[in-house]
Length: 202
Ligand SMILES: [Zn+2]
Ligand SMILES: [Zn+2]
Image 1 (cartoon, rainbow, N blue to C red):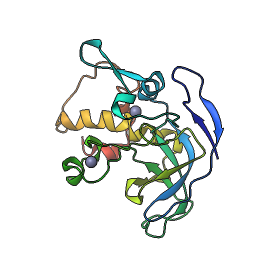
Image 2 (cartoon, protein in one colour):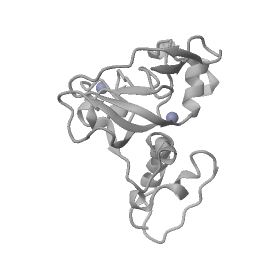
Image 3 (cartoon, rainbow, N blue to C red):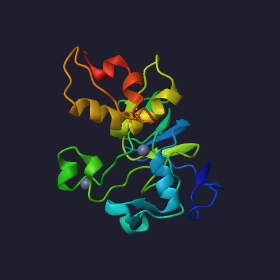
Image 4 (cartoon, rainbow, N blue to C red):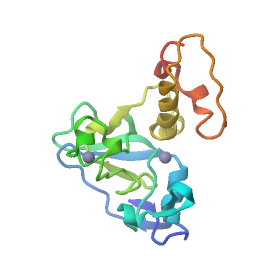
């Protein structure tokens, strides 16, 4: 398979030919149809995040290893399933949840893998979506994409969509209450475009 990878920081991504992974156990191989570009991809490509007070925090100090295939907003179709993968079948449209933990720390044990001490998030700590295929560690990180939703709109739901959804949820709005969204950029516009059924009544 081909993958666009960060080989050297701040340099053009390199198209590399890699072996297409084979799913084992509960793993699922997803053929990628759409992959979003998030600002975090730029941080990973630059090699640092800005910490408190503008201090640069190096991605390598946080466990990121290069070369890396970035991309964590992934939508595609199920291409192959390990023998223990269940609930999905070949050619099904899926969104990939990328915020994957190691499964053992206190955060993981209460289902908050996005807060894991030893994260293995797709596109950040392991190869992600700027490729033809991605190997997802378990079927439990897949969400079915309805027939009424297209791949390009669905892909950013797993990062941009979730971030905005978190803000809407934390606002605890009740039906008919109004809210002002300051900053209508890549995240601020999401509450307008999230499917009504995700936001619930009101
Ligand atoms: Zn993101
Ligand atoms: Zn963990």
